[in-house]
Image 1 (cartoon, rainbow, N blue to C red):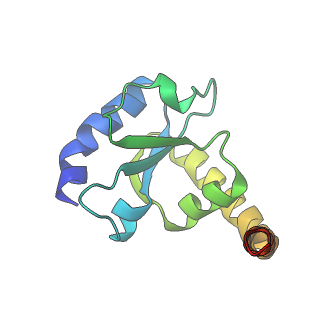
Image 2 (image 1 turned 30 degrees about the vertical axis):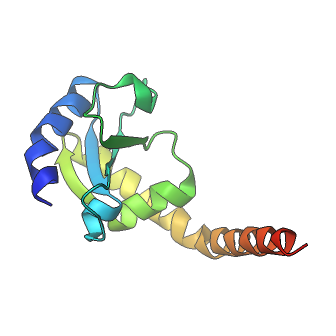
Length: 128
């Protein structure tokens, strides 16, 4: 976690400069399952004119998930498990979290079932 703490100010500054309203740390650095070579996963919500993740000048080991356009299975995990890095628009953040959590928790059984079916199909193809 030390490296993330040292980079947090630079990451937050870059996200704010690009117009992000709030952001999270997620992934292995957040749940403490990271290795020394793990990247830093961050997610940010922009609200308007969300950039593509590659358009931001972030440190090389930082992966950005743009929450405005993120698939539900990723956004839902961030909404449930992410660690808030900054919040410049609390009302929008609370609304996004509530909406995303509600839809994700409703849809999670279907998301998980589809993932299981896909993995089983891949395994069957591999046995041929």
